[in-house]
Image 1: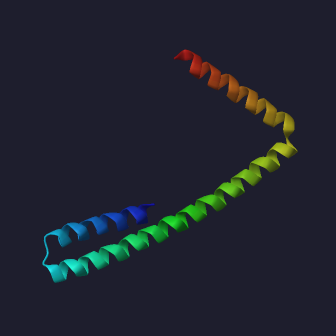
Image 2: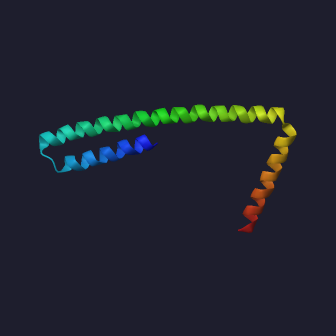
Image 3: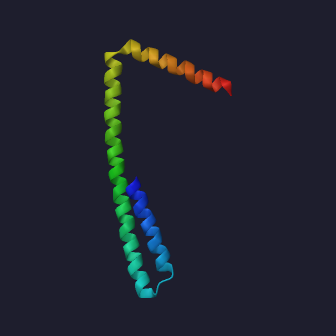
Length: 91
């Protein structure tokens, strides 16, 4: 995400420079900005893929734990429900 923010801020600077540049230079800068935006889009897609994979691993691990320890899982769920109920009731 830091890479994406960096690419987007660079693109923003390029577009600001393009606004005050001559037509030939502005066209050059616009093309560069479009390339930067494509790079940001590609990085965002890569980050999304990594997050999906990580989510699948976490889901599998949770499912595996719940099947191996059903009573502990039920106890944890009850405790979380009670805590959440207390927090909601305080307001």
